[in-house]
Length: 96
Image (cartoon, rainbow, N blue to C red; front, side, top):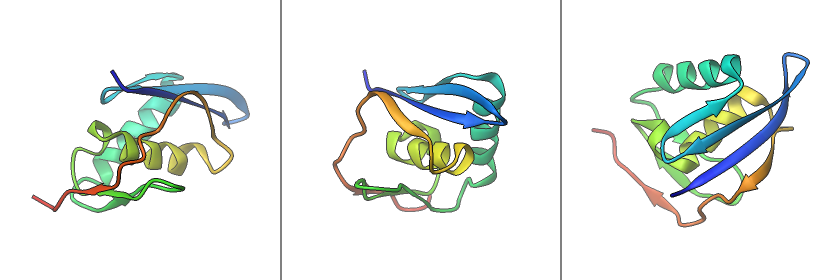
């Protein structure tokens, strides 16, 4: 099982969102915004931030690095890891 949790200030509230094997849980509005962003970006590249070099074109929430990138997009750059660990193995999946 792979999981990580980010904490952030979202709409003036302190929240947490957890990614576990492709599933988001936590603050309802933040989870909804992240999931909506994933749908909007379907078929487009999502490049993860920081030390992780990974690109996905589809099913963004299935990949922990792409999910992390989407979480940062929605929650802001001040979001920080409070539990778990991000994978560091670079991979790339072509558009399908």
